[in-house]
Length: 138
Image 1 (cartoon, rainbow, N blue to C red):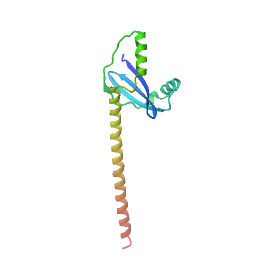
Image 2 (cartoon, one colour):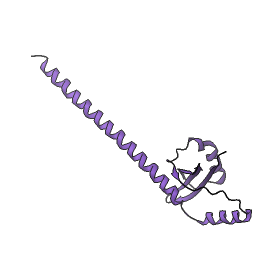
Image 3 (cartoon, rainbow, N blue to C red):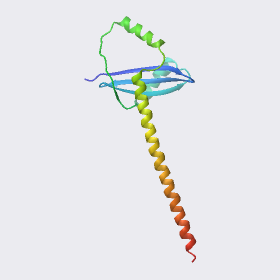
Image 4 (cartoon, rainbow, N blue to C red):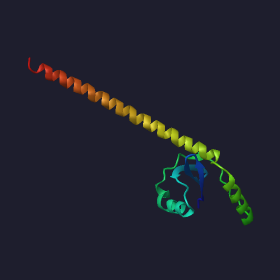
C-alpha cells in the first residue's frame, strides 16, 4: 500500500495570502499554489481544502525522499510550532512550482504562435478574395 503525505503552508506574500499544497506520492513531490487574498480563517482553509482539493492543478512531479519516522507527539508539536514561525516554502516545492510555471509558459507560447499563424492565414485569404472580387468585372 502506497503512502501519500500532504502538507499545506499558508503564508503572506505581499499583498496576498498564499497557500502551497505539497503532496508526496511514491517518492515524487507535486505542488499546487493557491492565492487566498485576505487572511483566511482556519475554517475557511478547511472548507477550501474540502471543496477544491481534487480540482487543484498540481505541478509536474519532482523526485524527493519521503521519510517514514515514528515521532514523539511532543516533538511533533514543537516542530509544528517552529514551522509556524518560518516564512515561505521549501526549495523542492519552489522547484516544482517553477517547473509548472515553465510548462504553462511553453503552452501559452504554442497557443499564441498558432493563433498568430491562423490570423496570418486568414488575412492572406481575405486579400486573395478581395483580389478575385476586383477582377470579376473584367
